[in-house]
Amino acid sequence: MRVQQTPTSRRRATALLAAGSVLGGSAVIGLIPGFAGASSHREAPLILNDPLVDNTDVYAFSSPENPHNVTFIANWIPFEEPNGGPNFYPWADDAEYLINIDNDGDAVADYIYRWQFTTEDLRGQETFLFNNGPVTSLDDENLLFRQSFTLDVSTDGGATFGEPVAQGPVAPSYVGPASMGSAQDYVENLRNPAITDVGGGGRTLTTQTEDPFFLDLRVFDLLYGGDLSERGNDTLAGYNVNSIVLEVPKSEVAIHNDAQANPVIGVWSTTTRPTLRNASGTAAAGSEGFTQVSRLGQPLVNEVVVPAGLKDAFNSIPPAADAEAAGGAVVARVLEPEVPRLIEAIYGIPAPPTPRFDLFEVFLTGIVSSDVVDVDGDPATPNPIDVDLNSQALNAGAAMFQPSEMLRLNMSITRPTGLDMQPLEAASRLGVIGGDIQGFPNGRRLADDVVDIELLALEGIYDVSNVPADRQAAFEALKEGDQVPHNDAEFSSTFPYIAAPHTDSVNQVNGSGDGAAVAPGTGGPAGGFDGTLIPAVTGSAALLLLAAGSASLLRGRVPVRGSLPARA
Image 1 (cartoon, helix red, strand yellow):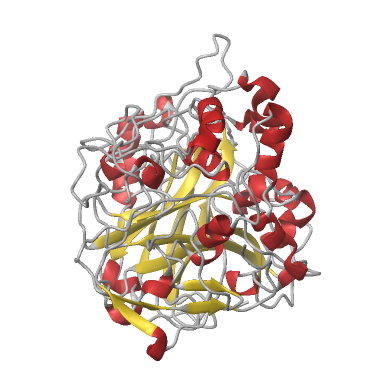
Image 2: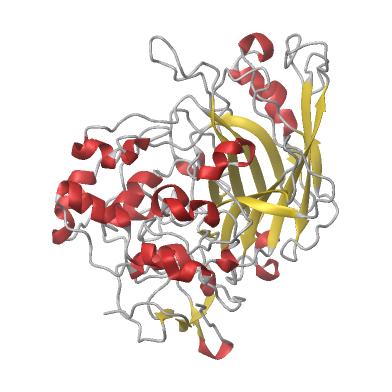
């Protein structure tokens, strides 16, 4: 199942994209014997045994500080309770933590950024303490557990890696105010000094942070209690995660280093372990190479969409293996998603008609107009997202396109932008569905409310200002989503954009447990958010193709090969 793009079939597009759709389908995955994996907040069975390599979320957005830079954030180790001593939350020093970028659409990583960690544990048999006194710097003698990282890059799909482009200290886990001062002290004394320059331009940081994902996970209790009564509690409030932040020039990751002609990239994170490991978890003698044990692109794909029997397998394969695996078992999940059927069964709201080619497009090809992507060579037919936005097939240098699951970002959209391509005063938490084409699913900003966006898209609602008559009942029932519209800590408009770690215990007698996370730096959250609930942008339909003229993109009619149900 491939998308062919040839020079003779391409045509020049002078429009710079707009429009809408979001999550609701899934990747196509395979069952590969001998491989194991898990990612995204404990959602796959095997990850329960190895939380240090559990991917939780991936973000990709244009830097709010420098429009020529792109920022990637990948998080690991879910549900870090701030009081989790004495070992707290180190990075695994026998694993590889990877951010992968496909810029030409063939589902193979053109750039792989790899972080590896080294541990210096000075505690020995003398003490159980992480630190034996107040810690005010990264080299403070009272800090008894320290880690450092090495960052290198592969440009051949991971076969080889070059010389390190960055080496530096890891900001340690936040122990508490007696050990490391306030959250702001932690930022100034331990986190900011760990920011390290990257060769060729850019910077990186490895640190603990409060978990920036916000949602009510009671969606698993038969979709919020069967009567929408179980909503409004941020399940992740007060918890921390480990985070890798990378910011590089857009030209570094674009085809031919030309981010204007080739602005669309695909992003996903992975974690690998030694192929053979001892019972203690260390690499065994004779172990050769590494095995992928975690993968994450779009949010909540493996957690909510992929059926339980395929979750571990999803994490074991690269995107290039998506389209041919498992006999199309999960392609069927894209075209026939489960959640709308559950909503119909529980709330009586009819599910949108299937097959859902709109969701196939969002997840496996990127959002691209129907005259660019055809299924099985059939004539292009209109669909709810008949626009160009974030498929690598739009790049001038696109290769043989391979449908695959990943987070796709059009880097040419550098600020919150409305349907008329004019700057917005504030971003919409609903991203493209709210009229803001800088937001999810065009990449993912920290404050994008992906759960609410996904629920609306699953119900076939792509424009909150113009809901189709047959979707009004669904919209009225779900328009407040999970009633968690923003994060429990503010984000920053300056690098690294994430908030400081929470300091208070999640489990408190008075039930507050909201921590003391702060937003270092000035301004509001990344992407223009001001830390408050921002209403969706209203106006004309979010599915109109808008002229921009700031980039010239090559695209053409590209049939998708494979056995998919024909469009009506």
